[in-house]
Image (cartoon, rainbow, N blue to C red; front, side, top):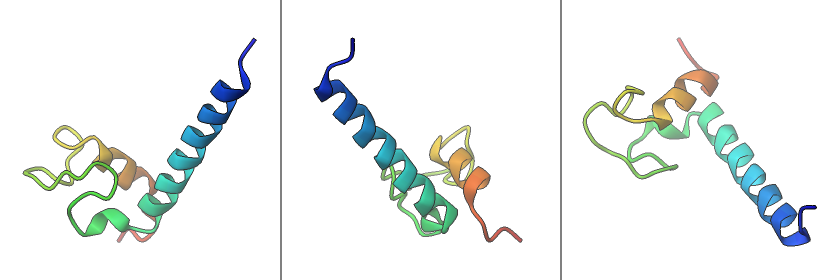
Length: 64
């Protein structure tokens, strides 16, 4: 049986991920450094170099 503390932590982790996803959807990653992990290096928009880029490309709403 899961403890109340574990449930609370899981709920907070899920809320953080949901809020991050909203920021990705609104284009918050368009201006480096990455708001999520702080990365600002080579391959910023390439998932093979920067894992957050995958979420950005999946969720960003204002794609051309």
